[in-house]
Image (cartoon, rainbow, N blue to C red; front, side, top):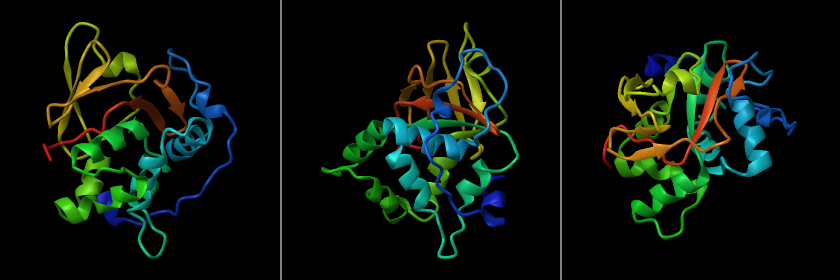
Length: 198
């Protein structure tokens, strides 16, 4: 499905000014916020500086005409849940791949290292269809399988961690959980999820 969306018309990334609204969230799902998922990611980044790498990775996919499949997907009307890795998560991944001095710009090299389309696949593996708050993502008694846009799964565990296709454990970063966007939900995680072992 993600490939079909990626082939469609995409919107250019528009920056928004910080309003602080992204941090107004509740552990109990309430009325969706006014900002979409991309606007909230930019907003939180402006406040906490947590998403330079994630936004940089998304920007890598912008074509010469300014079209971007991820931005188009996460600014649209359809509902999605994003597991957003922190900058520290991307830095740890780059260092694990042998990059001694990580930077957001180096994220664009993923396709050169692992083949065309790898970056899009990794980003799609952080998104699932529908609005999923923590109480539906994480079963309080048992692990459960959650299908991501790639068609691959993550295992969500009762302790608010996820196990990805590479066998890594990713934890949700409190209090950045259940961030209620107009078109979905964001949960911030401390590891870049991978559908495969690099």
